[in-house]
Length: 418
Image (tube, one colour):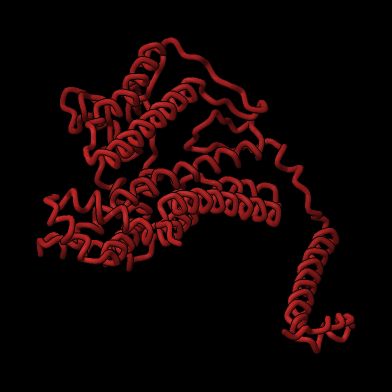
């Protein structure tokens, strides 16, 4: 057995940062980062100095001034006497509303169309192909204008609902009116309401809505526990207990009890004067933007779903069929759960694209964050840089929240491998 004497430790020298491959890459990265930061700081300093010389230093005090303009679609109380900050919040909520509605409808349509594109029915598969090719190859701005024109030209005006010789009638038991000014739908009301909760004095949150969401979340959590218990029993005995009525009951019954306790009833729209009053008013600009973004994004989601399903081995389908599962059960229990791991990453990009494309709302007069802060507020105050910076910050925050939520879900359904 031979022994090796301890080698002397090498002394560090500055020239090793350049000539030693162990330190050279680190040196290059530090120098590049420092150069980039210097460039950015020079650009910011130069911009601030030039704006100061023009008499327009960067400051956000204008957000406290009166907005002095109306917003045609609001989720919270707003008047023209409110501040530009509140107008920006109203616009931001309108953006979030369109993004949520659009992502929900586009997901349902995209999954359905993607599955139908793989149908063995020749006609159904070709019709879905035509849909995908038409919608994804035309700019989304043209679709927004197209849907807006359809709604304005094809729907009747409110006065068509008036009189004994009315040429138009309300739908669903005289509860829904579709007009060329917008849709009027029933409004949820509570005779024993819990009231509103003021948040920093800026806006109010309905405690009825908070209670409804809390009870719904608790019901879904209990339903998930029941499902997990059924999974454990199935893994242990091979037999799965019937739990659908329990899961439905723990979600629905508490909600019905809560609604009865709050005195829930619906407020129907009525034609009074020259227009409908009461109910929830959804402007045509909102409907057109929602439908256009949903139909357009659904075409891309359909292709993502189709690709995810095709990525699953055909042997999985054959094995499930050999066990006696019907085609719809094979798709819902075997194929789609595995395809989700392929579908979700590109699906995140489509959600982000839909959210950012909502900024095209200004083309049809829908007052989102681009129309309020980036439109009228910027025009009135002349604070272009501040408004653009705030909008970039808003969209960046929304996109990061969506990405974080979807990446969390992706990690939950990802196949665990060693």
